[in-house]
Length: 235
Image (cartoon, rainbow, N blue to C red; front, side):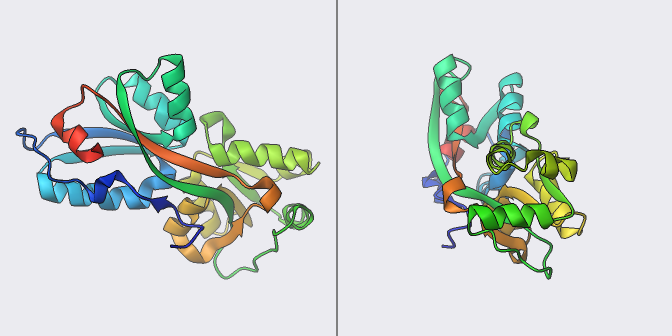
């Protein structure tokens, strides 16, 4: 599998879809990080077809998905970063639950398909590419976007934070970042490479240089008291 694509080994999942729930047609509310959108939607469609249950999913940044799940007592499943799940369990915000590691992805850069792809293989080349780009987009760190938060640290480390932010657009999430890229509104977008390839593989420039590499692990969490339908999806 392409190292830039998310490696989802979701839910022995190949859908342990032999759900034993007797309640047919149940709706499961899911809050999920946008980085898992494409593989999750495929699995959800298979699950719905086999069980008759319905998946109602809200995609957002990892941090926003986590916050919305915590605020919604009707929510059945949470898919966010393993780091956020670990923090939630440690703080007591997530208690009495079960979690499964789903897969990993790395943060990277996208450019409009057909446009020249800058060399970002080293810190100096990345710095030059960011300075020469007319417009840059990345997910808003204030909304809990791991790639956006990381990008701020990188441009600060490179000493170009002020220059880059002057021409930057803060996107709501990686999906919006990719919309801006594919519409040609920005020259470079920063998000999870899983979000780049699920939007348009031809837009992928590559991951951060090795010294700035960011790998993110996504996991699924649900309460032990969850319905048979929820446990069947996550078992």
